Length: 490
Image (cartoon, rainbow, N blue to C red):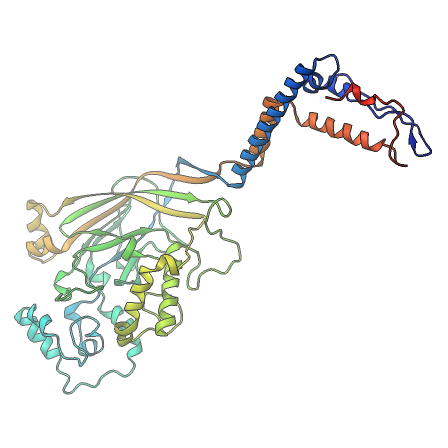
């Protein structure tokens, strides 16, 4: 391209003796200005080119503003991919019997302390007549003998009754677990750790986050396979409907990461007796973006986590929020809530804790701010089932476990949890637009609308800088040639 130079000015006594550099060299260097600002062109032609340039500059400004607004809106897109793995960590599996207490294991202190909470007794500790009406004759007589408090000394420290009650009267894994295999190898009750939820005493398999079990092959027979006895004869009698009433018979199951506690009353699925249930899982690793692109909660090393938990999770956050609501209103915590506060007594459960917890769950969106963690693992599930036992095996199972065939059909179930294949789905939230994209779009629009680049803009700025640098510093210029601007006026 043709170079243009800035002639030196002669300054004397505050008067500029030579005109500043003219625009035609720059106009010849940049063709858009050439058609607008050189004298050989007709006025109409220069006007049309000027209008075209202004229109293009306007479109450039509009496009630039739109791209800038798009950048400031922080758009995102989601990318999903399927990745292979030589082995996968098997998830934690939490099991709950929806029956909170074994009816036939109640003792006189239990009936006196928690009978009203269980719906068996009235406030004066007498048995509820409607409840007695639904019992068989033998159970009715047994319960009436249990409710005879004529020579009974009530327990003194009722504040510890609820924890010991759930521990003793919840269904025991030693009684429920009939068969257990993991990866073809036998397992037993010692591999299930007790955990307390709103269902009472539950059990978690493979809940140790420091030493999780791994699976090296997909398909049935390579995961967890258990046979359970749900013990329906131990279920509490139901004679009315309350928020705690459960009409279901079976097992509630939640498959979750070792980094989060079970929230099984809302996130669990049911497994029915008389069926073998197959649960095919696929691990999903989700990555979200923090502010301003998303609303996830980023984990910071050394950051204080929720009390009672090593890792932040939505379930842990909601449990903590519910506990704070109960402690604030009732000055104690429920058994399934983490913390060091004292555990509510049965009377406080009835009069305060249950109602407060129900209100906290209903208003959780308003009361609790529990953003999604930026990195989490969840498990997609496909569930299918077949009926058991078949006619050919019913008698065999009855003899093997010393039960009758009706009991086997009404109480036994098989649960098979496995990975479909040794792969996982990675779902990532990505930035859809960044500064590099903005500069690329602006550069493309500059080339499209005004045929310019960053170097062209720098040339113009350099010209303006040189213009200002050589201007007269002693006073307003007095040009010697009156028609000096005729050469570059548009």
